[in-house]
Each structure stands twice: as C-alpha cells, then as structure tokens.
Length: 90
Image (cartoon, rainbow, N blue to C red):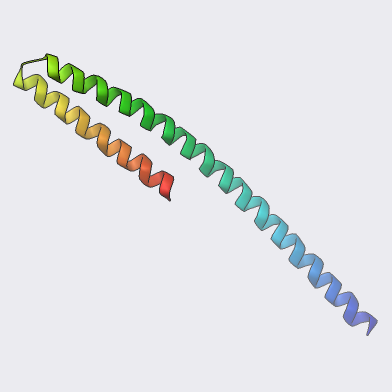
C-alpha cells in the first residue's frame, strides 16, 4: 500500500514536471506571437500612412505611367497588409 502511494506520488510529480515544461513552452510561444503581432500592427500603420501619401501623390500627378506605378505600389502594400492581418489572426 505504501509502495502504491509512493508510485502515485512519483507519477503525479512527473506529470507536474511535464505540464510545467509545456506551460513554459506555451508561454514563450505566446510572447513571441504577441511581439510578432505588435510588429505587424506597426507595419500596418506605416503602410496605411504610405498608402495615404501615395493617394495624395496620385491626385497631384497627371501622368498615367506614374498612376500605374503608384497603383502597383499600393497593390503591393495591400498584399503586405493582408499578410500581416493574416499573421495577427493566426
């Protein structure tokens, strides 16, 4: 009976240690995800500002070549925004 209790206690201690390690791993992953989300939010803000600048620039430029280049750049920024949003949602 004493051996059974001792074995149960050892199993509980081993389970506790496993869960403690798992918790530490998950906490580290959560922190990394939070840092990545903050980075993406900052990038989104920067890209939104750049988009607004490009929109204003496009209004003041009359060249269709410039408009096409600005459109391509805005499209690229939108794709980057979409990627960051997808990372934040993951």
